[in-house]
Image 1 (cartoon, rainbow, N blue to C red):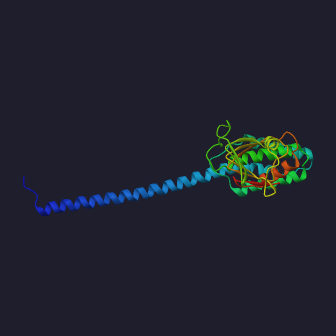
Image 2 (image 1 turned 60 degrees about the vertical axis):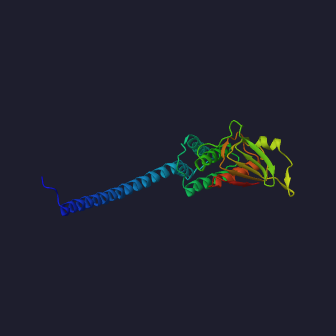
Image 3 (image 1 turned 90 degrees about the vertical axis):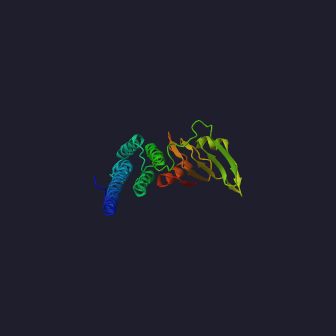
Length: 244
């Protein structure tokens, strides 16, 4: 068999090189197509997840927008709102802030119209509870339920509680009279689980950072409680501040 000449070997090498670059170009083209497909798929999934995160708030806003002609009808509307929010699923995606704000605005209107109806405050509590979980920026529910990681300190910022499960009325009973520069000490809660049942709230200023609320009002709240619940209903952040 004749041995290939130098020219033939060079031609074969050139062919292999051309084939290699054609294959590389085809690979890059396929990667571009695949990347585009994955981008579109992720965008679609993101829109679907956002729509699902918004859905409970949109449903509730629609119910609250219906015109009630009597106290009984309004009570029925607020009862339905409370029931929907208690059973709604928390999604990974965060809801649209304007959608959340629409519900908060309607809830506050109900507070103005029927402050003497207990269901007004129960619906408010359900909204505050659900919203705190839906807007939470950290993964999962904050730690602190067992109390082992709970830390409470008093300093220049006031009282700071981290990873605690706290009842606001209980806090009011335990901590009184603390002042900083002549003003009532502020309370800051980070990664806490915060309970409230309708009694007096202990501070002039409260800040909640990545905390969840588990409000369960069994009576029309104290004046400090109604003020706090009004502000929390209107908040669209995972770090709401309350001034009493």
